[in-house]
Length: 445
Ligand code: EPU
Image 1 (cartoon, protein in one colour):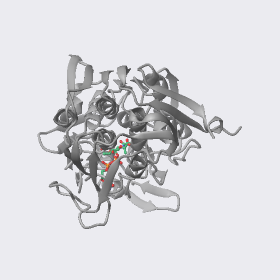
Image 2 (cartoon, rainbow, N blue to C red):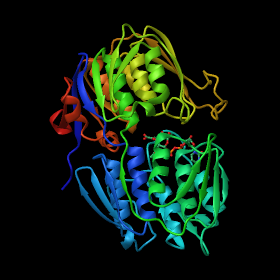
Image 3 (cartoon, helix red, strand yellow):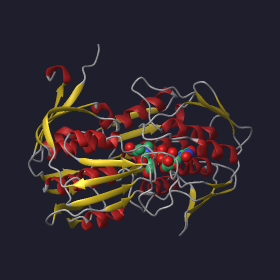
Image 4 (cartoon, rainbow, N blue to C red):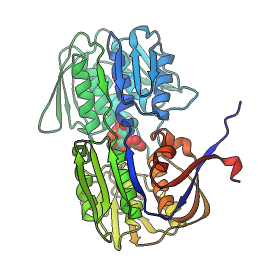
């Protein structure tokens, strides 16, 4: 049976007011599922979000022999049946997990083959650091028409890996490789995103010996075996910041549950600087609102603890409502502003430039990538039954925020991309006062 395409229909224009609970973080849940494969006994994960990426990862690890049981946010992963090291792309699509499996499975199998990695199209997204890491640990990597094959002879050996950039994925690959390698490993210039720290906690609970330090250096003393553990998935900081921007952009008042405010770091400072306010209600509940009219901002995305590249899109929608000229310099991905064209169609006034509009060191200087944005506000957004199509996951939520503040009806297509990372979006948002429905596209055309 052909599945019918669904879209969101949003009636916008009112301040969004109410309460919403953050789901578990996509960018830890899928990594925890990979970590579970390193053990020789089952692991249980709690607070797993009901999202496409978890389903894709589940299909991928089941295809190679893991047994997965699931019940409302609980996942039990038994890696004992892993029997093949040829990872297929499931029918449901692909994400960034295959490249992580290359290192993680190489302890168990002497040869691992993974398909070319997918994920959102927001830049080139090479995997050279992952491949370099596998080789430093003693593996040999070759590229094939379908993806990559890694081989080893004997046990992987601890290594010193200096990452050219603090890549989240490559740091995870090094953690997976180092945890069971023989001897000591050091990751220099490692990523220290909260989801990485969470992964380290999970690996430690499985028996890994991992030391963090004040700099971006992680030391791992390899162990012989890891056993299964129980691990909750932390609340999604990208979601939380997006709901804050929804409150700020719509002049609403949103209480966000299930988020540790510490991991929102500098977002809270930027939010306050533009005129947003927040109140801590308890250890995992933050109320977001606006303190008056919004002011413009200059923001540069960066690795943690900087302003996350995944906060950039909802923040940009909020800046369309700020009084003055704002600037965003994107230094993590070279091609993450495609969605601004659509915001302009809705009435925003934004412009892109290939120049670096900021002071951070930037790998995209002089490379002709449109990676700085100028946003002139405030501009009311209009929805005249416009149909807008989501280009990537984070832009998708930005479109929902844009549709929520635009007076009138918006239709948002391509929602499968958004639902890879956000679960139960329509029911959760309609529990506040936002009118959002998930309807068959055929009924709208
Ligand atoms: N990079 C390389 N070579 C590599 C790996 C990365 O040049 O081998 C570059 C990338 O091209 C990029 C930069 O390093 O310019 C950072 O990439 P990173 O490896 O940190 O990103 P990732 O691990 O692929 C994760 C998240 C992204 C998030 C980034 C940055 C997952 C599944 N994805 O990606 O989230 O933006 O870290 O924090 O964890 C999203 O969720 O929508 C998303 C894109």
